[in-house]
Amino acid sequence: QVQLLGSGPGLVKPSETLSLTCSVSGASVSSSRYYWGWIRQPPGKGLEWIGSIYYTGITYYTPSLLSRVTISLDTLKNHFSLNLTSVTAADTAVYYCARHLNPLIGFDIWGQGTGVTVSS
Amino acid sequence: EVVMTQSPATLSVSPGERATLSCRASQSVIRNLAWYQQKPGQAPSLLINGASTRATGTPARFSGSGSGTEFTLTISSLQSEDFAVYYCQQYDTWPRYTFGQGTRVEI
Image: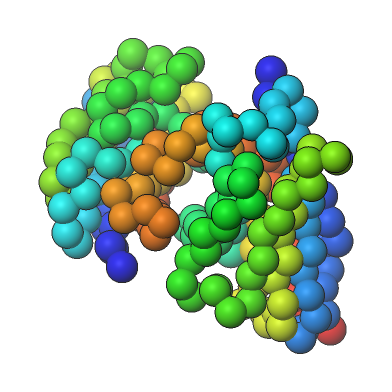
């Protein structure tokens, strides 16, 4: 049974970097079978795809965050990570990690979500 | 960017009734569309892929239809556990995914 568990600080100061990790159990982040992604949801709002990474390390990002976002894999720890620089209050959201089997399919496994507030 | 527009924003339905949710794309996404259900305080869960293929574990009362720019999610007979927010997502323009703003199904 595949499970994703997101973790990271719940409070980040404006202009600093948001860093989250998604630990994967029951599957390998180095498998060619999967893509791994991050999606966020501001309070009371809808879902926004942030980006995805393939086992090769190739990354794909939404254009609006391209200059601030980095997604990476750690195959030894079997997790993947999100870094978002220069955060503002607009980055306050629940951040979900998720898996998709290929780019032309939905996200079939989701983590529980990590709430992040940007505030001084 | 492909804009996904869902309607209505809120749908009030009684248990046992049929619910019909709409999702419209600003350009054709063929059948590259997924539907998700999100309950309060939980992550979304995948219901439908490819516009009409139920994901593993999705009850048969959920059905998806449509192609191009117009899509529908139908819940044939609402159960108490179906009251939630539903989102559509297009993945045709990979790597540029977009979601609709959601439809809340309430009692």
